[in-house]
Length: 164
Image (cartoon, rainbow, N blue to C red; front, side, top):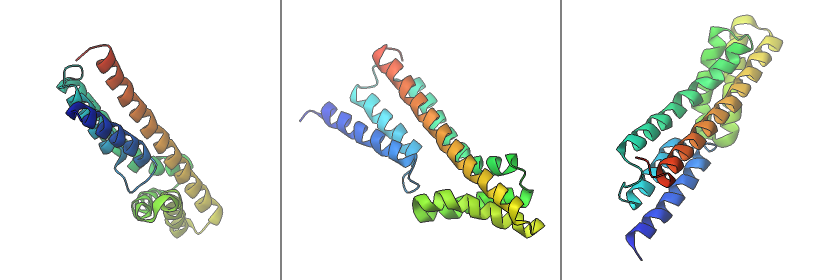
């Protein structure tokens, strides 16, 4: 089998794994997506997609991480959470990563609730902060998806319009 075909197959698998990783915490989604696009550029000997485009794609891939890490904190703050609840949401998101999808959704919520409850002892406000953290996670995932589709669009334009 020709090397370029193998590279295109590998690129497709990496891109698919990258999109899965945008939802699954066990996979580094943006890194896998970028790797897939870089392998696809390599399959064409970087004729269509050059280093400038790959650098832009790499920067976009890196932007997914702050979007993911701070989205729950932003959501909690937007819903009136205290600084301790915001910190709890960030810690909860970090701990939740180790517990799969339920941990990703519940970690920031629980962290924000515990943080808020520790300052005010008011369950209603703590629940609101937790809800805000969950909204933030959903918004963070949407931002990661938007960045991923932007990466695909830039790659497609460079590849099929022949730009470098």
